[in-house]
Length: 196
Length: 244
Image (cartoon, rainbow over all chains, first blue to last red; front, side, top):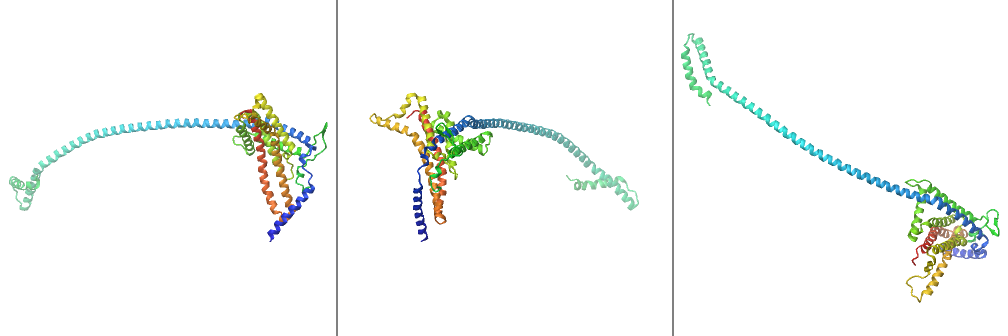
């Protein structure tokens, strides 16, 4: 309902407005030649001045700015590329130096190890010889000691038994008879103590 | 008076009447907006070209984008031979664009909505292009009216049509811009009048139309400036590179 009234009112007012315009309309001001000359004059004047200022002063500056920016950007790109190449070359150099020094270090390490191994071998030989000598000496000593041991024990046995007898019996016993007994005993027990 | 949608196109004198001989060259509202347009163009582009920084600021970017836009338009349509005419086409494009855009501000006057202004521009372009064509190609420029590959029987007819179409160039160029501007502004004025006459009850519909029309007219303002400039380039292309 309201919608209908709304659109009807619009329609009718359009009608009235058109009537009003028709009543007032005095044609197009564009076709009134009163100010044509004035418009042409001012158009030529303003457009001419604008064209002159733009073409002589402003546009060359803008084109110059654009050109200089372009060339500067190109220069910068070139410089950046050059620097990148430089850094690439330097990186290569660095890598070479690193690999070379690694090789050198390896060889030095190997040499040092070989030398150390040689030294260790020589020293070990010397020490082995010394140890062998000492062992043989010690064995000799032990042999000598082993050879002397029964005699000494016999002597000690004879002396102690003679002293024992003297103290027990109070009579002196002939050493030679005791030594004969000890020899006999030791020969019998010798195998038990010094059995090889 | 204000309700008349044509009254916005009225030209009236500002200040005293100036007469040179029989000619009235008084300062009018049209002159005022021509001066405003050119001064703002010169201001913007002067500011935009003053400093040359590698990273452009806003106004410099605006100036340089306009420069590259127009220069690309010219090189695309008229080739590299049109380089010397760059400044003229650039001024033309900017002048028409700024006059159109100034007209979009309420209570302003649209310079390009007057047939005499657009016709003077178009006639100048027409005469200039014709002169350039005859200078570059001599009487060979008349070959423009004789398209290649047309059967001999049809040739007289085609030549007549070509000559008429060539001669109608300034009219079509000027009327296109003038009619677009006048029609758009009249329509906006009419819808604006509806808003007032329909009042609070019915005014909302034409108001929304008015808003939409404003957007459309801004687009048309740019587009017509572009069309004006690009047609100039195409005519220039005919004169410079004769390959019809």
